[in-house]
Length: 212
Ligand SMILES: C[S@@+](CC[C@H](N)C(=O)[O-])C[C@H]1O[C@@H](n2cnc3c(N)ncnc32)[C@H](O)[C@@H]1O
Image (tube, rainbow, N blue to C red; front, side, top):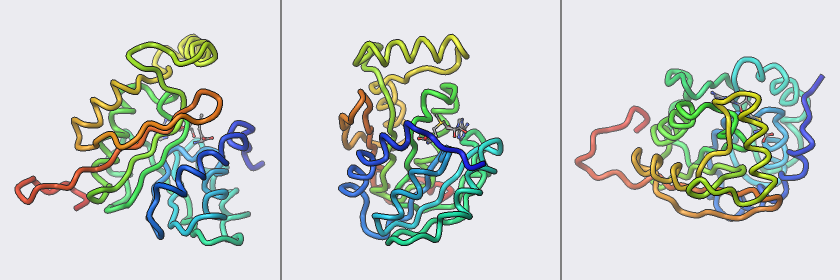
């Protein structure tokens, strides 16, 4: 069976419109935690990108099955075969430099240390001025932006205390600490947001990162 997410179907349109505005043509994009692969398919049908889906081993089978079925469909984008990537394993990150890293609805599933790994890994593989785009529900200084996000957060924490809706301000501080500056914070339907961070241009005196 090929995995399918109803939520993905609802949010793929608004996400595509953000990426249409923010990604440069022919951007090389790493998607972290692709899940069912529906975003990869939808975006490659519309945008001239080179898209690299990825996920943890337990989600890779289904992702590969969707890729085999539809990846070579019509559209200007090109979808690479999915790769295994657990953000906690630095050796699994692809070599950069990339124009963008995109991840939808993953930060509240990953434990907080893995979220920090996602930020650090993105900073390593992004080219100067490359973008990290994080989609999902986020709070601000611990305050939820809607009752439904608050209930969702409580639900996640009841399932596993290491999960939970992440705080946009805390994410921005941690991102800045690894060289990712806040570029935008966009409101999207159903109380979701797209947080966009830009990899700052390295000074000539900076030590090289592994990807550069
Ligand atoms: C709620 S699903 C979202 C899937 C898809 N991005 C979407 O929008 O429908 C969360 C995803 O995060 C992935 N994930 C969780 N922890 C991860 C980690 N440490 N490294 C990479 N992916 C992870 C899961 O495997 C899963 O595919």
